[in-house]
Length: 64
Image 1 (cartoon, one colour):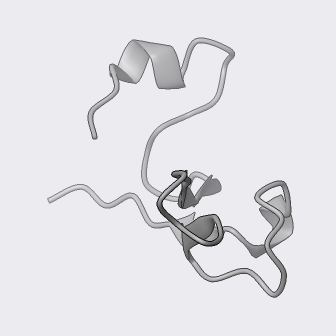
Image 2: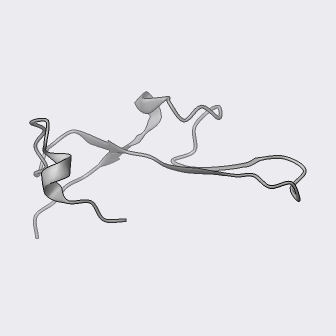
């Protein structure tokens, strides 16, 4: 995945070492051929609720 840095910082947030960014990747797979919807997420949340931002992983930004 790629996103322009200007979009990430458009509202004044800093994208630099020490910034407090969180990350969460999720998807749901549904099809009439599946018996149930499949939910995939990283990090794994305690319950399937993609809005539980307090459980999102910390994104460590490092300059190399």
